[in-house]
Amino acid sequence: TRITGIELRRIAMPLVTPFRTSFGVETTRDVLLVRVVTADHEGWGECGAMSEPRYSSEYVDSAQHVLRTFLIPALPKDGLHVHEVARVLAPFTGHRMAKSALETAVLDAYLRTAGESFGTYLGAARDRVPCGVSVGIMDSVPELLDAVERYIAEGYVRIKLKIEPGWDLAPVRAVRERFGDDLQLQVDANAAYTLSDARHLAGLDDFGLQLIEQPLANDDLVRHAALAELLRTPICLDESITSAADAAAAISLGACSVVNIKPGRVGGYLEARRIHDLARAHGVAVWCGGMLETGLGRAANVALAALPGFTLPGDTSASGRYFATDITKPFVLSDGHLDVPTGPGLGVEPLPDVLDAVTTSVEWIKM
Ligand code: OSB
Ligand code: MG
Image 1 (cartoon, rainbow, N blue to C red):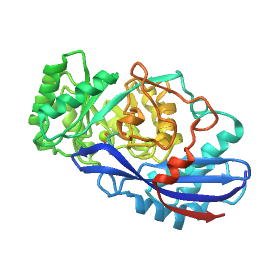
Image 2 (image 1 turned 30 degrees about the vertical axis):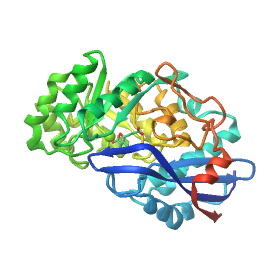
Image 3 (image 1 turned 120 degrees about the vertical axis):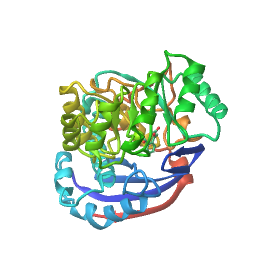
Image 4 (image 1 turned 90 degrees about the vertical axis):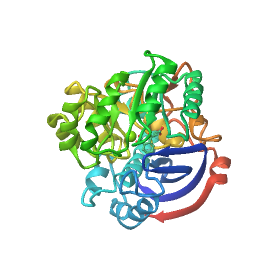
């Protein structure tokens, strides 16, 4: 199909509560949406990049710039197949979240035309997925316990605590003591530690954690492998895995025994599926991470999370975890699960009035 043009739309989504990690605090989610328009359909892709280059080197302005200047102009005007997008964009290094948003929009347009859902296309093995929630760093342990209690009451089947030096053993101990050994509990450091913290981190081994996510620097597979020898808590990598090749290296080095798959971080849903396939072949568990997505990105993530190798609950929370009003019909938790959309493409679309109300800019790139 012929692409007639591509819209780059920025929206500002207020968060229901500030989200604090070891790398910063977010109060409003600044999101870039890519809309690919063809003769008879359109497709949406959500860019995972955040306002500042802290989680990774990408940020929203950089994603919009590289899409406008390099990635979109590289696409052929006609006859583009979704499987060719990554290859056409490969000469440009990095910028995986920008590439992912573009590929996802092309894929959505293609699937809406074909009448097939993301879930069916990717190979979903179930019609709903169990959901975890990522809980930010708080000012006090009592405040954290109240938040965790509310999430458990809402039905979340797994709790992930964000940690950093000074906010690790005490909050984990408090949550474990208050909610018991049966609670599926894990932590995420977002690269806030070094290998010299190994002995301190081994203090987490007493709490029966499912895993510790990205304790060390993004680019340090070798020290993660060394740390794995010193901890009983399984290591899961997030930031370090930007491709299937990274995942293969991490697995063969023993740098992780679990992988958090975020489609944006790895350049798209097709690469995400390759990592799933690779990990599954090696008996390595994977789960679906998140980047505070709106309903558009969430729909695709829930479809991916339904693949058979996603054996751990993901950060596929309900829309209400982050937004009072989502730009799509909200994803609502039912018995701790979200349903995989079944309609063509993402199976959800933006509600025009809500989308307009949160839009801060629109750029149209004619093909
Ligand atoms: O490290 O998983 C992370 C959010 C933004 C950037 C990085 C991370 C996160 C989360 C929340 O932990 C994921 C979500 O609920 O969407
Ligand atoms: Mg993480």
